[in-house]
Structure formats: structure tokens, C-alpha cells
Amino acid sequence: MSLRLQLVALFTAVLAGTLLAATALGLRIAQGSVETEIRKRTDELAFATTVGLKKAGSDDELLSEELAATVRMHRGLLRAELTRQAALGIDAEFTVARSSPSGIDFTRTRGPAARTSTEVLEDPEAGRVVRVVMPFSDSRGGRARLVLLASLGEAQRLVAAERRALLQVALGASLFLVIAFWILLGRILIRRVSALEATMRAVEGGQLAVVAPGPAEGGDELAYLARGFNRMLAQIRGFNAELTRKIEDATAELTRKNRTLEELNELLVAARRDLTAKERLAALGQLAGTIAHELGNPLNALSGHLQLIARRTDVSDPAKAQVAIVNAEAQRMAQIIRRFLDQTRGFTPTAEEVPLGPLVDAALDLTLGTEARAKIQVTREVESGAVRTDPGLVRHLLTNLVANAIDAMPQGGRLDVRAHRDGPDLVLRVADSGVGMAPEVKRHIFEPFFTTKPKGKGTGLGLAICKEIARALKGRIDVESEPGRGSAFTVRFPAERVPS
Ligand SMILES: Nc1ncnc2c1ncn2[C@@H]1O[C@H](COP(=O)(O)OP(=O)(O)OP(=O)(O)O)[C@@H](O)[C@H]1O
Ligand SMILES: [Mg+2]
Image (cartoon, rainbow, N blue to C red; front, side):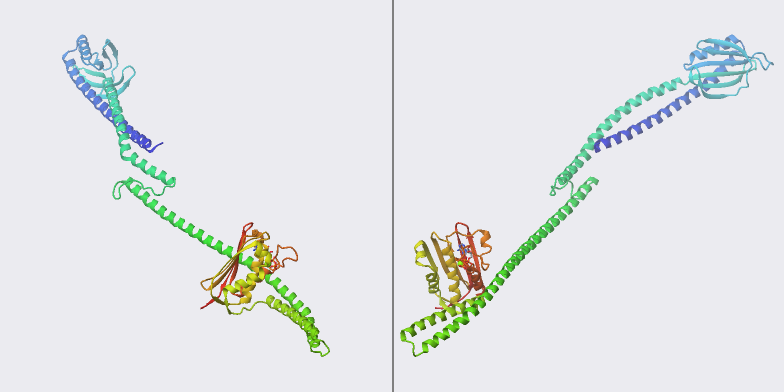
């Protein structure tokens, strides 16, 4: 049930209760006063009648006439009864003349002792009546008594009529008041309550920016309620903003942590791969050491013997010349083994002044054979001037990268070699338009012994050594590649410029 209906129902109940109580009380008072008036009038009539009866003497006919006249003349008087001592001196015998609108009726009876009284009683025929008893002495000096019975029906009729009128007025007034109350309630209360309710519904729907209408200060309880609601809304808005900020902060923190975790994970994977790479390189170092040991000693012995042969006087000069050549080759072999051993044991870079152009050209000359030059279009973009670095290691880097690029373009293509300085760094870039690499291949290329080339064609050591060299030079090596489109390797390491 709506608030308006509840209030109107309450108002109607209170109004009806009050009106009914007031009407009942008023009717009761009115009925009381009318009855009192009838009693008073009956009393006075009884007194006046006794005076008339005394005057009428002792003749029964006359007395009866008098009684009948009294009943006829007074509306509402139901009965008049005269009881007279029949014979003087005989106490017990009384004559009773009872006059009513239907006629007079005489009886003889023993009369009771009578006292003056006025009382209201219930008559079986006439309903509520007033009975006035008035003793007196008749004209003979005998004892007599007059009883008048007057109807209170008039009072009841009056009250009933009044009740009807009052009820009609009360009904009309109530109807008017209820309608007026309904309209006023709508104007004063319901419109504002509805506005407040609409605001609450808007908030329920998630619109926190709304404001309940009402004056900023003062006003009635509703205005106070609206202000309280607005204050609460402002607080909720504050909490909401605070909560959103905290959630955003927490999310950002989580994202940061996640990123850190991912980075750490990547580092871990890289470190693991590196470790395996190192282990393999170490194994390779041991293998190289064994080879050097196994091959180096016989080679040294061979070289010593060849030198002895060269010093012998019984050997002809042309033979000595051939022995010298064989000796030189043997020493070259020993040197190659030593270098290989050195490389697998780690690099210790030198710092020499190197002009960049000739360095790159030497690397290209070493790698690009006639066949490759025929099918590959080479672009070379090298910064002029010199830098301070290890030329051997740089050459090694370039030759490995260029060799891989050539292998990646069996049908020919474009090779782009660049060398330029970027801040304190020297950047070498070798790009090809060859077969490119799948992500799965790209992930492993820096691992020692990883190769996609057929047996006898590739050892899988080229890039692993390049990575070691880049690290020895305090730099890094990166690769970009797309299957079917080509690859680009970039090596970046610090190299001081030499002023020209
Ligand atoms: N420019 C490139 N284009 C496509 N794939 C490449 C390129 N460079 C390297 N690769 C891939 O990386 C693998 C490893 O190269 P890496 O130089 O370490 O060994 P390799 O060339 O196979 O053998 P090695 O260099 O010892 O002769 C190659 O087998 C090839 O699959
Ligand atoms: Mg290679």
C-alpha cells in the first residue's frame, strides 16, 4: 500500500472515530436534556392536575372528566390514574379511575401507601416512560394519589432525527476533509517523497552523480532527509573513487609484478640455455684440448725432425726447400690448432686502431666466393674513420654472419652489410633476403652445435662463438627474422672512435 493511501486511511479512521464519538456524546447529552425537560413538565402537570382535582370536588363523574381532559390536552401523556379513599374512615378500600386515550376505567382496590416520586421505567406497551406519583388530600380531606405516565418517545424521536442529520453532516464533512487531505498530501508530501524515491532508484541503477532535490539549509524533516541522503551519496562517491583507485593501483602493481616475473622467467630460461651452451663449449674446449694434445705433440715432433733434416749436409737443396715447405705447413697446422684452442678457452680482446672500411671489406672478401658474388647483390654502407677494437674478433663476427647469410640464399638474393657508430657503440648489421627462420629455430640458434644444415655442412658453432665474442667485447647480438623474407643480425658493442 502506498504511503499516501496509508496516511489517508489513518486520517479517515481518526476522523471517523472522532466524529462518531462526538456525535454519540452530543446525542446522549441531547437525549438527557430532553428527558429532564419531559420529567419537569410531567411533575408540573401532576401538581396542576391535583389542584384541578381538588376543585372538582368528590363527584366521580367530574373527577373522571378532569382526568380525561388532562390526558387529551397533553400530547405525550399516556395515562392518568386517580386513586381515592372510597369511604372515609375505611382505610383499605380505594377507587381507582384510570384514564387513557382509549377511555376511563374504574376499579376498586386496596391502595398502597404512596410517596411522591418521579422515575423513568420501561413500559411493556409504551416503551420508555416517566412515571410521576403525587399523593394529595381530596376535597373531602380523604387520601388520594395521582399517577401520570408520560412517554419519552418524543425524546427518542428527536434524538433519532438529530442522529440522522448529524450523520449526514459528518459524512459530508468527512468526505470533504478526506479529499482535501488527499490533495494536500500530494502537494506537500508525496511529490517530494516521490522525487527522493526517484533519486534513490537512480542510485540503485548505478548513477552516483545524482542529487536529491531540496533546500541547502533549513526546511522540514523531508528537507533534512534529502540533505542526509545527499551527504551519504557524497560519502559513497568518495568511497567508490577510493576503491577504484585502490583497485587500479593493485592491478597496476600486479601487472608490474607479472612483468617482472615474466622478465625473471625469461632471464632464467636464457640463463639455463646459456649454461647448457657454456657446458657444451666447455666440452668442446676439453675436446679441443685433447685434439691439441694428441695432434700438437706429433706435429711438434714432426716439425723438429723436419728441421733436423733441413740441417743435414747430405740433403740436396731442392729437397731442403721441400722440407722447409712441409715444415712451414706443419707449423701452420700447429698454429691453427692453438688458435682453435684459444678461441674455445675464451677471448681476450685487444684494442687496436682499425679503419672500419677495410675491415668490413676484408671480411666480405674472405667469405664471398665467385659463385656467391654472381647470384647475390651486395650493398655495403660503412661509416668512414677508424675505431679502437679487436680487428680479429670483429672480422670473425662478420665472416660468420656473412657466411650464414650466403647459406640462407641458395637461389641468390640481397645482402646488406652496415657498420656505423651509435653514441659510444659500434653497430654492425648483416641482413639478407634469404629463407628466414621459424620462431622455434630462432630460439636455439645461439646454442652450440645447433644447426639446421646437413651433416658435414654446418657445425652449429658459428653463432655460439659470435655470441661469446659479442660478450667478450661487452656488447650484445640480436636477430630479427621472418620465414620466407630474410633475417637481420645486429651486433652492438662499445668501440672508441679514433680522431682522424
Ligand atoms: N642468416 C640466416 N638465415 C637463416 N637461418 C640462419 C641464418 N643464420 C643462421 N641461421 C640458422 O642458425 C643455425 C645456426 O647457425 P650457426 O652459424 O651457429 O651454425 P651453422 O651455420 O649451421 O654451422 P657453422 O656456422 O658452424 O658452419 C643455422 O643452421 C641456420 O639454421
Ligand atoms: Mg654458420
